Picture 1 (cartoon, rainbow, N blue to C red):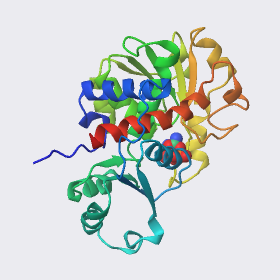
Picture 2: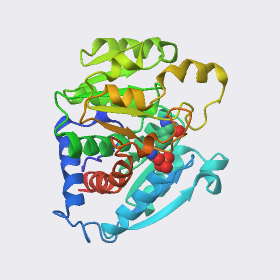
Picture 3: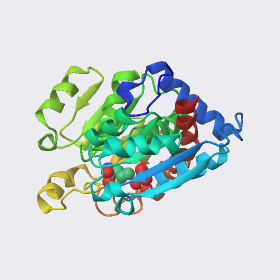
Picture 4: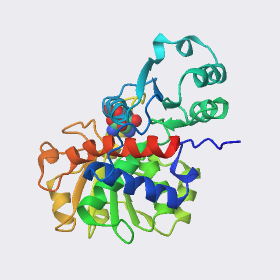
Length: 299
Ligand code: CP
Ligand code: NVA
C-alpha cells in the first residue's frame, strides 16, 4: 500500500527529506525547477480555523503554479464548524481532494485529521508548531548567511508555535539556538526537552543571546487565540527586538519575523525597515517553499 506523506511536524520527517524540501524551495525560486503542470488535475483543500494571509495565499498560488486546483474551506461555513467529527470530515474530503492544509488550534486535531485521511495532510499552523514557516525561514537564512549548520540563531520573545518548530529544527540540523524567552512562559516538560539538547541555550538577557549571532528573530507576544494581558506583556518587554539588539548581533547578521508584526510591542518601530531585516524575502519564500512541501507530499 502507498505510504501517505503527511507534513505534520519537523520531528516526523527525516533530515534528508527536510534538506531536499529546502533545496527544492531554492530551485523553485531560482527557476531551475518550473513546477508547471507537475500536479495537473490535483486539488488542494485549505481548511482554516484561524485567520491567515501568508499561509493561505502562498499555498493557493503555489498549487496553481504547480498546475493544480484549490478549494478553500472556511471552517465556520463547513459542518466541521458545527460539530461534524474530524474523522468523518477526513474520510469525506479524501474522496474529493488530493491534499489538505489544516490550520487549527490543537495539534491533537491536526493529528486526528491525518490519521483518518487517505490523502496527505499539511500542518498550516496550530498552537504547538508552525513547520511550514520553518522551511521558509531556513531557506531565507541560507540565502543570506549560508548553510545553517554550525551557525547561530537567536529567538527573542514568546515561547510559541514558531519557536517550538525552531526547537525541533535544532534537533535535526546542527546549529546553535539561543532562546531569549522568559522562563515563566516555558512549560516544565518543554524545559526538559530543551535542556537535553546541547545546541539550545536559554538566556535571561536578550543582549547575551544576540552576541555573535547570525540571525535575530521574533514573533508576536500574543498568538492567535491567546489572552492579551499586561502580566505577559511585562514579562516580555525586556525581550523586544530593537536597534540596540541588532547592533549587538554579528555585522552580517539578519533579522526575521514570520509576520504579522506588532510595531512597538515585540519589535521597536521601524525594525522591519532595518538594513538587517529580510522579512519581505522571508514572506516571499513561503510561496517557493509551499511548492516544495506540496511536491514532497504528492510525489
Ligand atoms: N506567517 C504566517 O503564517 O502568516 P499567516 O498567519 O498570515 O498565514
Ligand atoms: N505565533 C503566531 C504566528 C502567526 C503566523 C500565531 O500563532 O498567531
